[in-house]
Amino acid sequence: MPKLFEIFGYPIDDRSEEAQQNRMEARCPFMGCDCDGGGNRYLSQIDLSRNPALKEMFPNRAKLAAGVCSIQVKNNSAPWIVCPRRLLVLGRERAGERTHQINAEIATLRLLGYPSGTRLGIWPEVKLKFISVINEVQMSFDYTFDYLLMPISSVSQSEIESTTNLPWSKLQKLLQNGGYTITKKGNEYYVEDCPTGVPSIIEIMTSSTSGGDKKARSTIPMAFEDVLLGRPHNAPSINYRQVWARMVSQLIVKSEIALNWGGKAIWVVQDLLVDYICASTALNIRQFLSNNTSEVNLLSFSYQENFAIPTGVIDLSNPQLFAGLMTSDSANTSPRIPSFQDIIRAPICPPLDRLLAALARRKPTNQVIAP
Image (cartoon, rainbow, N blue to C red):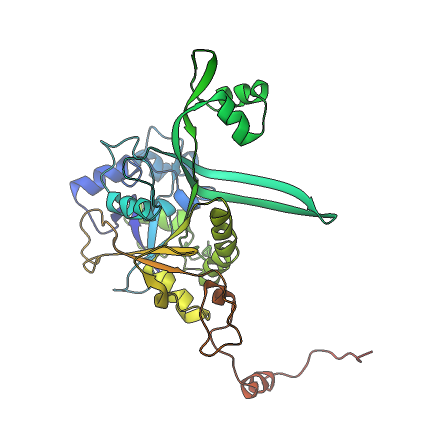
């Protein structure tokens, strides 16, 4: 039965004073602040008024995020990360409080290709909706980016009007409501820390869970509660197909958008997800191992080999870049040139006799006459 591996950043078997103190503060060591529930944040909030046992542990809180970082499906196997904060957090506003995953941040940012020293603005969870009519057909783009990064500097009013195609009368209100600082230099206004230059997209793809079973107390909140209270627990399993489906629906689109803007998209993943995609699709990601970015870019991180030692926060390591073309025009050439488009193809094709053997196990439930 799957088990929780880490909560609030520490292995559940770590009973050190440091780990216990961090749990009592419900703190995420990767963000350097209170845990927000990460990838499960909309479903994992525990109402402490309905849970007296946990309320005693957290008397000053009304609600508590179930801070589950990872799940171990089998004993002695590397855990699956289920929280995006566990994989990567960008930005160091609280540099004094955040000491983990810094190497992962540096490895990711270096791939974007900005000159060293460039000040980059970070916008998390940017929703972009755009509708246009092309050849009398309404087309729409409606996606949310995990992180959007862009160089920032002091930008003049005229430059912003030119790049946004909006009049200053409208821009000024938008910028003020957005928290920007507007100064006047001579006869022109300037916006401080304004985005300018080439944007980049960073997507973090972690695993989804199966949801669990309330009767078996294997939902995320129930498993989390049992661990905190020192009880035996069961955890939900990993929903492998959902992980793949979420990625395949966005991988090409967001990579294409970044290229169209002149930038790059980097997908940050765990090595276990790379292995799963290689096994379940026609895309052998490991053949794209590279030192340089391309049209589609996956940056993989792993747990250290000594992850089973349940002491302290485990920083992910072994960054590997897998970069390749979005599509290939060599379908009819031999040998065929692989591309990331292979992620939508079957890894193998079962022979017809396997289908007939499967159908032999039960007769048709109904019949129709072909017209």
